[in-house]
Length: 96
Length: 139
Image 1 (cartoon, rainbow over the protein chains, first blue to last red):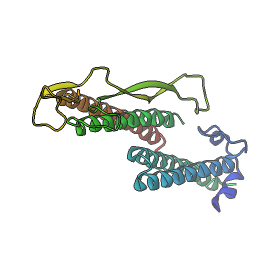
Image 2: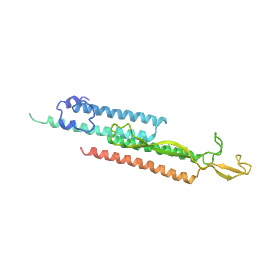
Image 3: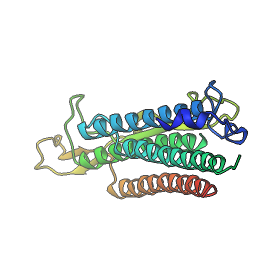
Image 4: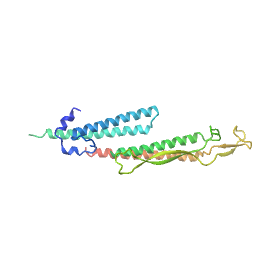
């Protein structure tokens, strides 16, 4: 999370129009934080579903679907992070 | 995300087919049960499926529907009488009222339920593959 304030300084306009930016805070830092919270939430939900499947109160396929959901969310988050870092490095390389 | 909608609809289909499987298992397990708490033989059960609006989605613009088991109803056909005078539940003519469960019908239903489950899994796999391909655009 240390990287977020460093990245939110330049505020590249292109990154604000990323999909999934449902949260009100503007800037890519807020967007990233929002996404991180959502992915974390998905993983917690997957944990709960796995526990329910193991204790017999939930369905096996629900647990697997929740896991897949968490997996996809994480992959998406990683892609967004890669793009943010790429943009940051691009700006860093700019000669003044 | 739209993949979540796919996931939710697939999940409802999978749950419905699981419940159907449970009912088929019950029918097959009780295919020779002649005694029940209500009296008489076991009665074959049917699963009744119904659509359920997917109301928990944020965007209600598309009215997509999920599936759910609304009722597990008993078959309307009566029992299957069979001549078996040695059976403790035989009447004075030697006839025993067996459940109206046909193992062949149940096996067909089982195959159908299994295939429907597979189909739902395939739909989810396709959705996931699409999402992963979409993520590959940025690479």
